[in-house]
Image: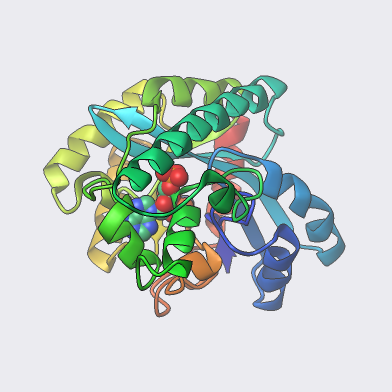
Length: 281
Ligand code: AMP
Ligand code: FE
Ligand code: FE
Ligand code: ZN
């Protein structure tokens, strides 16, 4: 069993890198991909623990990009060569845009009579502070009953507290990942076009033309129908396949490492070898 999409507490998961490695090893995963939002800090910290545990660790990242007026998540994998200094430097710029969004989000929430400060939220995050950290504070202070409720009431794109973060373009994100020897993979395509399959088909074709190399076929939010359709899209567009749970620990309590939601996830081991081959070309 492998899991190529997970988050540590260096982005918006709740497990420390050491805890995530221990959990992965304990449940018998043969390889683990760490794909924190906007940072390699969780991966970097996990390397010695994975070595000690004899667990294969894959370096990854998840970026929020802008494409055709929509926010789209893009994964990048570095199974052969480590990410370049240039890429790491560019991520500092992502963190900067995040801090700017967080300042505006605090102001917006305060304008909605929510008693919240940036300092409170920042104590929740390590390398970066994301909306799930805001959600945690909203729950702790009684403004929402759980994390999901905090998103529904305040933080979701459709909610009244939402503020837009400046996002990089899909084109630039693809270019940067490719230039660093990485494999860009479209994250959880189900969120791109819900179940509008024709729209998604056109979309994936466009992205393949822009340099996309893989798509995330296996994910905790994908139904068996989604999985077979995305498989056919990968085949049709000559793209590789990736998969993972999108584990966030207690921030997404329904998602289990390796096995997804109620055991709905089975990521084939062979994907890893294919990913290496893709990265080597
Ligand atoms: P940020 O990158 O700080 O804007 O936060 C985005 C993260 O918040 C996503 O990666 C998810 O983990 C989480 N998230 C976004 N929208 C929702 C939602 N509607 N419900 C629950 N979690 C969400
Ligand atoms: Fe997240
Ligand atoms: Fe995502
Ligand atoms: Zn994710």
